[in-house]
Length: 615
Ligand code: ADP
Ligand code: ZN
Image 1: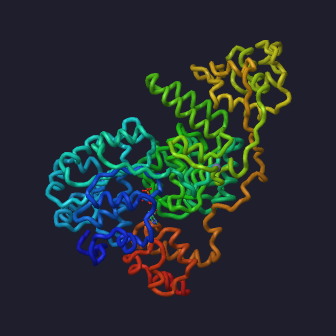
Image 2: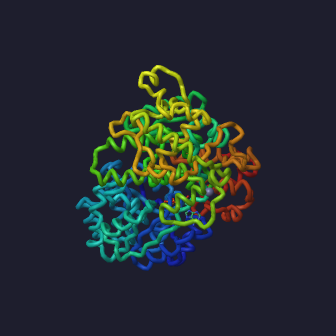
Image 3: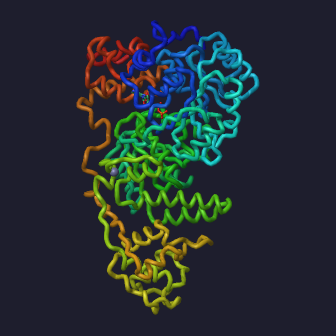
């Protein structure tokens, strides 16, 4: 790469003004909340710790100061696979960016190092293990450094799920480069992780910038699982046809079978899990990033750092283990701010399976206790009868004054019913049959089913036999699910799926307290969402024009070997379609069009609008 060829993005005038950089380089009119304060802090040479949700706009917080302050900004990121696209996106903007990690050969690395030493780089992305090599540290010691940005900073936390031991070494930056401002960024919200980041990265003196964790453009929905595949198909078909999405499953087998099922229905659905060869995984990730309308079916192994902005839906066919995981996984939808859906189905078996996994896992009691609490919080969100967003944000110590109007419980408030008597029957049935049976059996006893198994056990003689005919089997299932989810019943430690009473259920059994249960909505076509669909192309007035713009973007992207959104985001494309600029000047006024992109693509897109050919 010849760095000389990259024109500098710095505005010709003085470098001092972040606002000018925002407009001229990035093509954005205004900073988002907190961005400006964070940038000021860094520009003034002070440290910062930033917590922002995915899609909140963290990158600009260091990219703008990188262009304002003299020297090269060093960005530490564990996401090697993405550095290339991040750098490509910056170069599109005319910013002089490069990366150093294990994927490049010696020659390239030397060229990049030279560019660093001669002051030809605005930003240098670097994997942590690379940064910590004595050679790199020695080079940095001689280079002019504007700032250090430590992305995905929660990787320093041993409690988190993304711990990277290399991150522990990063506090060397505080000692060796005490004059250089440092910014640590993460989307992981909880207090404990934040404290750990501050301590381990020697950022205790840094100002903390914590933005709201609300993602208003994501619609949260959780439905009882009836027929998961059919529900998933209905959901995609009616709301996200032809759009990109991620479907999460717990096991590799289920990933494979779900991907095959979707393929069979004509979707481009690619499996992704740790059991696939690395090259297959890389290929599927690549296709997801570069092609339109690809669905990835994955275990949690997929997704960290996927910063594809136009993922329109995230579907969960299995329960995540915690709200942290749920929030992080659903957060991969809609980074571009456009309407997106976080959709999940869950049922009694999921609860039982997760509880069994937890109890059977290695780990000491304290660890299990924490995990148990996390799972309870997750189940709480599933069963909540008030606004899901409020519940979710409350968990992260954030608050939302009013119910959101954009989650399923807001859109179709669930009915509740007085489950006191039913719950007494269910619990005493568990008790009378010796706490040795699973749900189906218990339901059969309650409903007075006459079969050999029950007769042999003598359970046709217990007092709870046949006392529950007022509810259908699936209604009883819903009762049991809520009892397990709310901790009144647990599964046996041996893992047979037998239900047992917990301490908490005493008051219920004795009738000392009542309980309201959620009435599961009937899953019929009629309960499908009737409000505005999230499908982006539904908002487009001129489908032909839209397709022409997309085709143009696609061919430009292919020519350069970059993902389409690196050329322009959907939101920018939509604005072009709506405002129909006719001159370069008008084109410059589109959000997301900075100086470099105006020069590179202005003419091409204007000619598409004028009805000419796209390339
Ligand atoms: P994060 O790293 O926090 O997940 P990004 O930095 O990738 O988020 O930003 C998310 C999206 O928001 C990107 O497409 C980015 O270009 C856009 N964005 C960030 N700041 C602004 C702004 N001030 N105005 C308009 N768009 C912005
Ligand atoms: Zn709501």
